[in-house]
Amino acid sequence: IWHDDVTTLPEDAPLLIMANEFFDALPVYQLVRRAAHWHERRVACQDTMFLPIAGKPVPDDLVPEALRDAVPGSIVESCPAGVAIVRALSKRLATQGGAALIIDYGYGGQVIEKVPLDTLQAVHRGEKVSPFYDPGAHDLTAHVDFSALAAIAHNRGLAIHGPVAQGALLGELGIAARAEALRMGKPPHEAGSITAALLRLTAPQQMGAIFQALAVTAPGRP
Image (cartoon, rainbow, N blue to C red; front, side, top):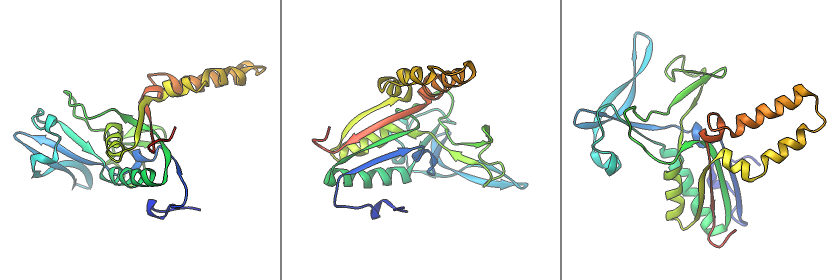
């Protein structure tokens, strides 16, 4: 049965939820620092080209206190839709029981560096392009703030496991042994493809560190 909204999920049994590359596809909300104020980041059209601009100033309390005095040009990113979904799922898990596993592009929390934290990107045929170029023709994605999701679940009384890098998770689950079993008896080119796939999934410079995994479980559940 397909569900268009979490509110229609069944209520008569524990829930087992897996979200793989789901939260990274939800819309993000960005604030950008300009001089002494934070501004909502919006999109304008100039000569048929779309580009990001700084909108009206916003109250400082919309920005986490530790980030309010960041240098001009810094960006704070959030995902209101993701927050709402995790809040709803956490309420269900707390009352019905069960567990959720989230695997996605992501990071552990907001970090202001010299480079603004702007993770919004577009992908076309495996290559990164501007998210404002040819809108509607590319996949849009943004990295998931796993610390924010974990905090919501924790506030609902759920147990938090992770986040942990995908490479570490798959390593603990025995992916190296699985790959070795698959390589046995295979011709060199097929064995090489398996090795390449293993590296792609686990190597820190590839999906091994870029992807994070977070599990939340209902109170008293393993």
